[in-house]
Picture (cartoon, protein in one colour):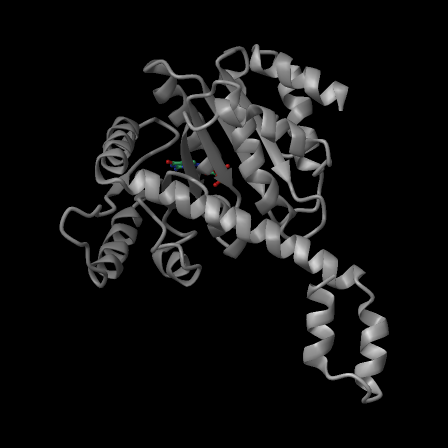
Length: 309
Ligand code: GDP
């Protein structure tokens, strides 16, 4: 406890090693994290969170690096959290040392960290909001959460963001695939990357066709489609402009408040369900099962007995 606490003090004072240790504790779901979160909570709520998702190979890392540069030029401290919900491999080395991020390695106002699932399902979905809180409290004004794919877990994690960016590219992660993953609904901004490739415009057309089916309420947000070439930085200024516009819209429309409320709701529900599941599996369910199986106890009563503790 003491160690995690002093790491908290150090991390809040800009010590990135302490910050990294704290995030490891979060990733490991260390029981000490609960106290830390409670202590840093008053310092949270200031960061702007951008989620970036898309199939492997569409150019997420390249674009993230370019985006960090573009945002840094405007001043804020930026943290990147690369999240891999499907990989059981340990974090840290997986994406964190990525060569494309090297240009920011000496910039103290940029913090890059990867988190991978430690083998149990749902663990990372629970850990990511805590990691965001830690980075937020540590004074990062912009937090980019990058996920590695377009599955359900990635969609869930991307939904933790204030602005969700979905990245597509010709030949991979096309519009149909994104639609299947249920990601069209959560996107605030579409980027068709690799605009230097001939098929990019076709991806834009497909996407437009699919989005036309949906409707936007008056005063609502219509997700723009932006084309970029992440390798040259082409289109990046427009991405920043549109993200800023979305941020303004979030604040003005009250949607930011609504989203953060919905997120907190999801989080509480998930924690409560996890606790309940724990209680059920620990609570002598086998003993009750034996009685239900031999017909001496009805299953409704058995369930009630468990919930009553
Ligand atoms: P990720 O798996 O989504 O993170 O994709 P990466 O950022 O690792 O990029 C995958 C490959 O696509 C790399 O070889 C990049 O250099 C390349 N790439 C990224 N953006 C572009 C682009 O705009 N145009 C082209 N032609 N290649 C790109």
